[in-house]
Image (cartoon, rainbow over all chains, first blue to last red; front, side, top):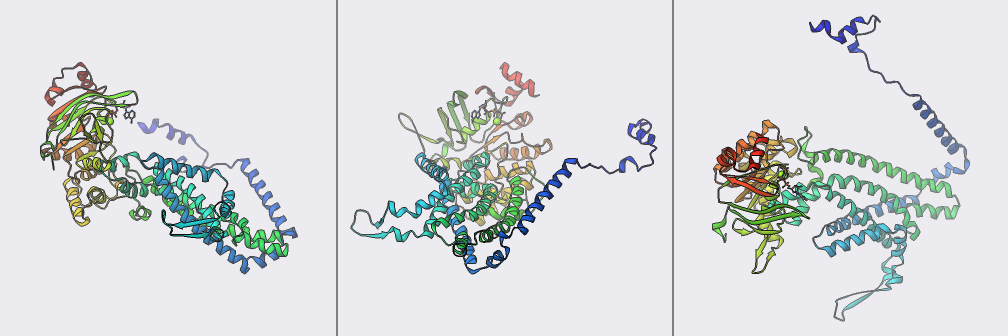
Length: 315
Length: 258
Ligand SMILES: Nc1ncnc2c1ncn2[C@@H]1O[C@H](COP(=O)(O)OP(=O)(O)OP(=O)(O)O)[C@@H](O)[C@H]1O
Ligand SMILES: [Mg+2]
């Protein structure tokens, strides 16, 4: 009875076009004209860029090739990498500390930590760097001693704060402020029910932070920190103004001598780009992994994925 | 224990709790004896959760007396006032009160076994090996033998809630609070959690349970409390409150749920 009144079947029977059965026809989307236009525009731009790169002799690709692995440049690159790692490490540790202070039960501590973040995020990092470089003008002598005794040791701040120390201090302190915000956002992403469950068991603040809040905020913190790392890699170029021999400074030293400014800047850019691309692969893997974990850092059962993934950062 | 006689009891007199200007609990009087099973029923927003949260110390009361396990909760009485206890002292009180949440709130970064161990190990500093054995025994007692290495997301809602009960029990609480423990569960999973709770009731645990499961209340409760608008409207034996309610508001509520 149903088969004779089935409207779809009737429709198919009516179809005398000789094509395949209606249930097995592929579904096709036609590409819009706009897409072809976009492709054409894209090709045009690419052509223009490539052509000027190849035909404009001022690029001096031979000079680029000559210097791209020059010893001075490579030494600068190493300095850049070392600075990045140092500043990110100090910045992350100090940032975690500041973030913990920001959730302190003591209001003055919270205010102090908040002021730190406001100051360092509210002023240009370049200015901060120059400031640290010239800190000796503010405190020419640093007296380290035991309070209320005569035992003390004067230190010449000018000698203590070399360009490199100023760079590490400046970038780390600045990074710490941003990192503190990342940690704070991560802490805030932890479900309130988790804190209540921990409280209900009588967990202390420290234990709660270490065992519940920090592990569960990793899915937000780690990808954001990865981005900061890539950002820091480029940000180190700022310390060239202090005369620190990192990548940008190295090429500047060379072109100050040879006047081949553009090709040497290209050398620097190529290295920055290369390193950034190198870092962006692990970064995308981290983001992928944590976006999956993120979905699971809730109590809702989700269909199977391996347990080891969840363990990774949490422990 | 210094106050053996008060263990497993809850007493409230004139308890009041407000959020801003909104009074959510008003002049609540409550007496729960050791081993008593109390079911709290009432419409949404009547203050059931807030009452349980106050008893667990998750919310601070504005006024009145609240004594759990024979001690003033979170405060020490002085001739003129109640002085807030130190964080540590409050934490110690909380270890003797277990709370089971509607949304389970298992720690997703820990396995079922680690969840159950978390209280003894992280709070009481109990040795790990012993706590692990104890956790396995508790998981077995809630019907989850062999599920110890599962993460919360690998368990069904009913299983998660049973792990949550085991986690609370691992602290050896003298009072257990349940805030709508089966409301977030699929209907076919409700029974397994209620069975665990029944078992617990039979073993003499003092329990306060906010619930919409009238059948369970009728069967297991010693006392049923009907709340509405932050007040205890009616309380008594389940047969009386559920079977022969005196207050019009209770009648109306029971009609709406049955
Ligand atoms: N943190 C809070 N801030 C402000 N108001 C709150 C807060 N928690 C609860 N309330 C209010 O207190 C009243 C009682 O809430 P409560 O959650 O205790 O009700 P309930 O009886 O548990 O309801 P349900 O059956 O929906 O769980 C509600 O009106 C609610 O809006
Ligand atoms: Mg509720």
